[in-house]
Image (tube, rainbow, N blue to C red):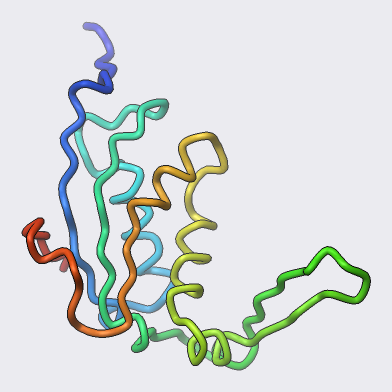
Length: 141
């Protein structure tokens, strides 16, 4: 029996929509990363990017467990001396909740040449409505 290896011409992408208020941030990121990589498909091939599009709604209503709202920190550096900026999760959600979701998903995707294309298929919206109704996305329970 031969091992099946998907060709790039055989890729069929679907659209999925997930509500960010339904799961804690970490579990939500696992579900999103799974769909972006295509691991839930029977045609999964590690070296071919056969993942789907994921639309996240209600990003402002992110849930986390424990004291993560106050203890979890996000760092960025301006590449100048003393340019380290530190923000708590609570502050990040106030400014732009998409950053928290995007960083969580990015941490769960393999760091290789396919990562940028996979992350480009992630669409995050603050409210309950999104601009991809025409694609007829299926809901992830």
